[in-house]
Image 1 (cartoon, one colour):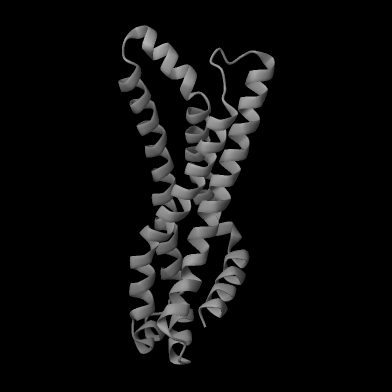
Image 2: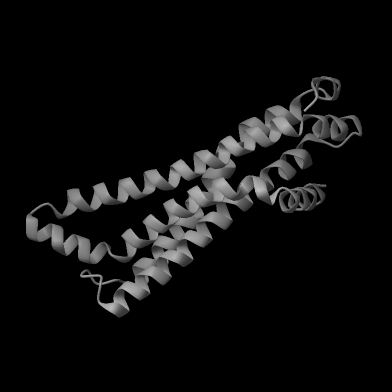
Length: 188
């Protein structure tokens, strides 16, 4: 039954692609920064060491980039809450037809997961391309590590998807737990 909920959620996410653009762009921005920071982390550490503050500067840069990534994830959660408000009648119909809560929650969680994954992957690809261009043209004075880029991409994508799903669970669970008659009479 969960598989059917996920399939329904995938169809719904594809239909509502326009609504995931802003959260995906915000997440892409954060992912871009995380990947670039990880790709340049060796050079940043070396430059910070020459100033005598390698650990502090490295941590500060990483915290700033992760904060931007999490802002994108919060945007995904806000979009999920807005989506649930717009789909109140649909949730009521599903509940009235006897669809269990778990497949409904699974269907509602597909959209934030898709938005976060799409945004993080886009940001990671753009960061790798930018790093390669900066490295090839010599514009980047700091060496760019392929391993750092890969680690940054994995972290950005993983953190984005997990955080988006975790922050979206409570509103989706609450919406799926609402009695169908209440959802149907609330409109939306």
